[in-house]
Length: 479
Image (cartoon, rainbow, N blue to C red; front, side):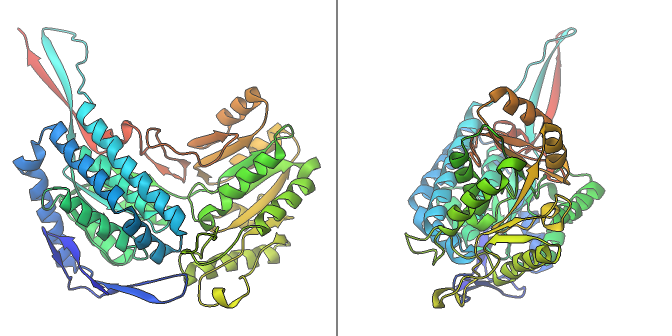
């Protein structure tokens, strides 16, 4: 299947080197997708800037822009199965998980459609003979760079607020998962989004990304992905003096306290690390448990992990499909091998599953590691796979010190019956999101982002729309 992409108001094959996408469940090439040359990247950004400045878009009343977003939401809902298949066949998530993420994407467009037609400007109190009004203006052209692990939700979380704020968006999807973005672009077009307000530029990040960010028309960048890539983007943004919203990596602590419901906590831990094969920025990859209950908790986790059913993502009985690619599977395996060299005990997993149905796919068994300290490499670096490190703690001070002993600060989970202690720990842990007696509970209405090396800025919520706008103060003299 040969696929074109939308750029400069039309669907073109692109004159760059073709990109092949591979199904990680069986290793087969699924599609060949055109990519843009540097000249075509420049042309797309120039056309986006012209479209963003047009009266048809810039001066469109908020409720009219909201109408388009509502139609996009309806289109996403009607095309949920197609979107889910497009994601599943490229990153290996189960169809049922992809279907849920398509529904989440539709809800995101609805949320920001409502925000678009109801958010108000500000009228600060006057300090003289004048009236001041603070309006919020779009940047113009926003470059959005999205990851491969959950493109349906990530692309909706960037496109919906950026469009609601009045911008044009040039979207660079991951080279691993391009089809969801192209499918979504077609839906936006059919919903009546004006020409040039959304362009999609497929291709490898090291080719298309730098060319996109250097375009003078790009006035803001939003990125979700790895921390090192985030640093590179931040350097370019700093040099060009354009704002950057960066949602980066994590090595999130998951905590079980002595008085917790251990069975419920272990269910939360298993979902928090193994759902989506651990390919989540908020995966609870470091589990801290009371030293006296370490073995008991590990035994229960092993039982639950070994009950997880690996299989083809198309099968309704499958709990987990493959990792996103064979290359990534090998990277995860190398981390586990490194843990062995550091003296780790592999309580379960630590290898590829056996059986003919797994031979051609990027499968890896859910893995639980014990016997290391928080200083170990697998406890400090983001593996982005189904690997859980279990670490004992002695008291609350020891727990907080270990939990915060990381370059990251994205999320944290706490299981306890003592809500005073939970609140105290939640305030003490360096993380942008803290869950208490739950994990990975997310809402489009709640700001999301990280501390430290986990990023800059907050997506989602009403402030997630303001992220894509700049304040303008207007003074009207009454003298």
